[in-house]
Image 1 (cartoon, rainbow, N blue to C red):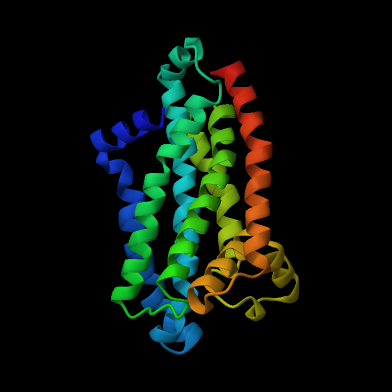
Image 2 (image 1 turned 30 degrees about the vertical axis):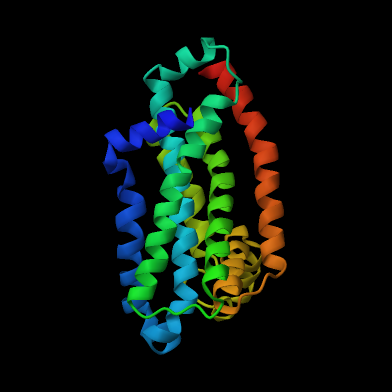
Length: 242
């Protein structure tokens, strides 16, 4: 099932547009528009914005997983899968596993783009690699949420709308682009408990300091909980509605 997903990407390479152009455009745009205003200059802003762009791009790419899943179901492809002697979770997990390739591309391009414009992570190459693996793992876990939306929604456009409605507040009310301390007190509380903030803080600790902190552990526990909850629920609903 994962190999099938990779074949789809090879035959329709435009599926990679969101993980190729988005990290490049967003990195340049946010860095040069907001860098001076928020951090005083671009160089000081890079250690903050690159991890934020990385998580934003990967979580956004996980939305596409749910959209493509719904599109496949609308075309009747999954009706055939249900009749095959395979594990019930295989079609869903295989499709999401194939998307890991997209996450790897987005992660690589984000760090490369940051390096080209002056980002020099003090944590070292090993910490950057670990941060990339950590971010990809968290994105794969989150993709199960959007896979659930893909199964319950009636149309692919509805999956996109529902997912973005939930994602945008989480992404912007976080520590991704600005320091949390600059927000009003009530908004600071929301940003601090936001799981997106914990993921970004974990990546920053790894890339900028080479350390693993509480945010890293909390994010991994949260990712494991998401998979444990949404994977069986998604499979159950899929078997009823696919």
